[in-house]
Image 1 (cartoon, rainbow, N blue to C red):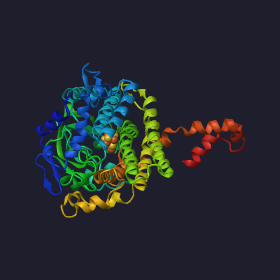
Image 2 (cartoon, rainbow, N blue to C red):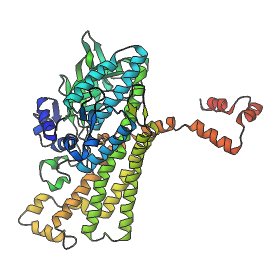
Image 3 (cartoon, helix red, strand yellow):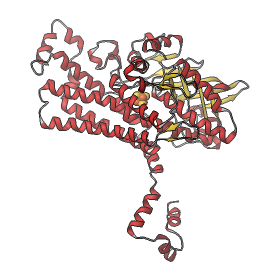
Image 4 (cartoon, helix red, strand yellow):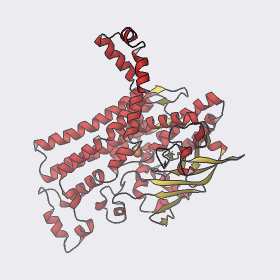
Length: 499
Ligand code: SF4
Ligand code: FE
């Protein structure tokens, strides 16, 4: 297992093609713009060496029997699923932001489960290939980007119907030694500071979308792979002051790229789905379940930091005892712990798949994530409410350090007498960082937008069983009644009506 600094050093062995603000980046490890994201991801390595967290942060590989970082593990039990979310809450608390490595972790588990099922149906050997790849990832303790979301073009068209065929990643050529792929994936969290990219399809596919039903892995510096690092609110603050960043060491959320595959070659041993379109939906659903499970872990760890910052600023402002402040902070805790309950519940309700790997309850994982599309907006609103307007009107660190005006800021931004003004400024900046920027849309759209969760909740909510329960309690003997009046059962009738 790598340590945090070994991980950072390992990034120097890769030469990914990365652009930011019109310039090609020479070295990801040395560019200040990526530094906070790298530090956050490094925490997933560093804590694995801390004896206090060994049980959460490490696991025993079911393939080799060796101790590995949990982020490369295939869940072997319900306990593993629970440890996963406990680990995520811990990392959220330690970084106050997204530590990025979970997407690849979830992709490894989803591809593991799905390749097993594809092989069962078609006698292919994807699962064995994938196990070989997984050994390589585990042995070298690599960070993978889970690359699912295609850019998708016109959302009303299926992949093969798009006016530009490249709007979903697809196979453009099959060769003796591998495949050539083209297309683009959006919102690739942690991409530039990952070692590997594990690609999956983004939606259910039909027979005509066969070329789009593709899963494979390439190194982040594969030839033809272009990463365009995206902008974030206040991103350039990283380049100057430390206080102005709010969370200078670990930064803002995620760190995403638009990832373009310009005819990238993938050798067969790294191809895990090649045209088995009827398994695209399963792969998406399994991945989404794993990733939605996380959000009551990582986001709640982050919320722990925000709640703490809010309680501190209330102290510094001299309002901590006001009953409405106590009430609002209690609301924040209630919402965060509700999301935590959801993550725990979907993990405890997990089950064994035919591959032997465990996955969480899809229904409850989707409920978890749907709550996280809402509650972080509310707890951020309360944090801003309690903190006051200085969250967005605090002068810069450069002015604070200026010999001519710094003392004015020191004097006039003072809260209660015994707390240094600098502490108050730091707390405002942290709350700004955590409640104003990219964190909120990330809670909304990361791991899929709310409607995607609603579709899954509707499908998995077993509405038929609930209808039956109501009829039994209400004393309705449906078949008898309907056959007499309508000539068919109620179920048949509504099936026709709803089409
Ligand atoms: Fe992990 Fe959470 Fe970041 Fe997703 S949003 S990569 S689950 S820390
Ligand atoms: Fe995310």
